[in-house]
Amino acid sequence: MKALFRILILSFCLLTITGTAVMAEPAKDDVKVTSEKMTYSADGQTVVFTGNVIVRHPQADMWANKVTVYLQSDKNAPKSKEASGINPGKIEKIISEGNVRIKMEKDRRGTCDKATYTLKDELLVMTGSPKLSEGKNTITGNKIKFWVKENRSEVLGSSSQPVEAIFSAPSNKVKK
Image (cartoon, rainbow, N blue to C red; front, side, top):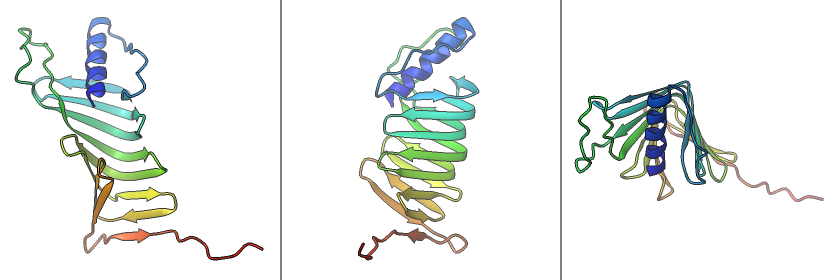
């Protein structure tokens, strides 16, 4: 995620200096974000991408209408004296909204209206008709929590949107 931070700051600086988007080719483990618009707020410590947002990473790709990156203020970083100075910290969380689609390794896919990823605990929380799939297996509910590092998930249902799991069983038919 440090790579995402570097890309965001680099693109902001280049846009400020040149007025056009110029980005270097990302390294193999970097995160590449493309969108129609990017807005950085030093006061709110946020970077907002809007319009056909695509986030590409070697472990996962994501598409959404809007992606907001929340930064923790780095208290040890030197303060800029200029009003427009950048003093971003580490990424705290990333919120994706609107037609969120996620494609991960091992044929894992997810869809939802809103996805929140917190870096501290590596937790992805999906809400708004969330659905996770792996191959032919699918699970839906009211809220899906997926701990990425632990490869563990919890699906919460409600009376209006209960948990529903469909597991593909291997066929017992013998080929002749």
